[in-house]
Amino acid sequence: QVQLVESGGGLVQAGGSLRLSCATSGSIRRVNTMGWYRQAPGKQRELVASITSGGETNYADSVKGRFTISRDNVENTVYLQMNSLKPEDTAVYYCNADIVRTFYGRDYWGQGTQVTVSS
Image 1 (cartoon, one colour):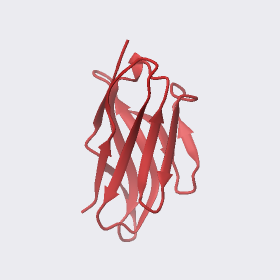
Image 2 (spheres, rainbow, N blue to C red):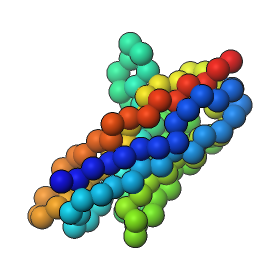
Image 3 (cartoon, rainbow, N blue to C red):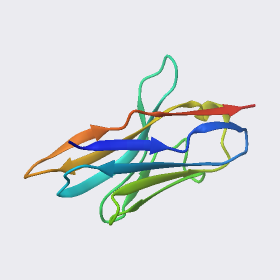
Image 4 (tube, rainbow, N blue to C red):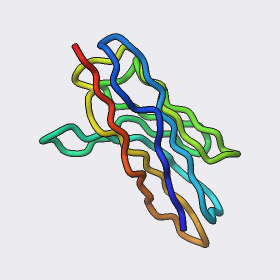
């Protein structure tokens, strides 16, 4: 069984920083793209940032220049460094990974971690 476990969320003032981590566990052959999504109350889940196994990154326009995604391919862990946080960044943040256990990859999700930015 594969699990993704997020950590690092919390309450921070506007302008502050947080670092999210997502660790994988279980029987894993390979991890392809990893990413972070977020969902604010009353809104749809949206992509925040993603990173391929080769290190190519993609960011939502709203976080470019403020957030940085990175990963450890040995530990199969993904991070999200969030700087200059704004109240509109408040949401539940979910880790996502395309994981290959045998031959084909499938999406796995973490349980989510709350990020609250106060003004």
